[in-house]
Image (cartoon, rainbow, N blue to C red; front, side, top):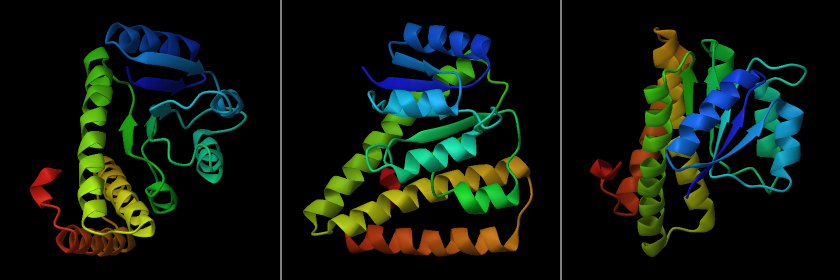
Amino acid sequence: MPSVLLVDDNTDLVELYTIVLTGKGYKTFAAYGGEECLALLKTTLPDLVLLDIMMEPMDGWETLTRIRSDIKTQSIPVIMVTGKKPTWDEIRNHMHDIEDYVVKPLTISALSDLVKSFFPRQQVIEHEIAIAKGAGADEVTLIEYRQLRRSLSAGLTMQKIIGQREESIEISIKTMKERFYALQHQYGIKPSEG
C-alpha cells in the first residue's frame, strides 16, 4: 500500500485529504507545517509528499529545499499542491526538485486522480531506469535520467499554469528534452514508454 505524507497548515484540508486517500487504500501521514514535516521524515519515509507552499513560519519551498538537502529524504517524490500560481523564479529554482505542481482548490476526484496517476508514472520511470541499467548506464547517468524526467514534467506543468512562455525557461526545457531524448536513444528506451 503506497504511503502519502500530506503537509499543509490548513487542518481541515489535511483531514479531508486524509479521509479521501485513506478511503482509496493509501496509507497517509499528516504534518501541519514545514517543521512538523521534517520531524516526521526523520522516522517515516513516505512514497509521496503532497506539500503546500503558503505555510508559516516555514513555507513549502524552504521545506522542499530541506527535504532535498538531506541524503535520507532527497529522493522522496514531492508534488506541490498550493493555492498560488508559480512565478518564473519559482519555476527556475524548483522545477528540478518536484514531480508536479497543482493549484488548489482540488475536488475530491481531482485529488484522487492526482495520487492514483502518480504511482503508475513512477513505475514507468523505474522500468525505464531498469532498461538503462541493463544497457550499461552507470549510477550517475541513472540519477541524471530521473532528474530530467522530474524537471521536464514539473517545468512544463508550471509553465502551463502561468499560461505564457518565458525565453530562459523555454531554452532550459529544450536543452533538458534534448539530453533526455539522447539518453533514451543511447540506452534503448522507447519514447512511447512514458
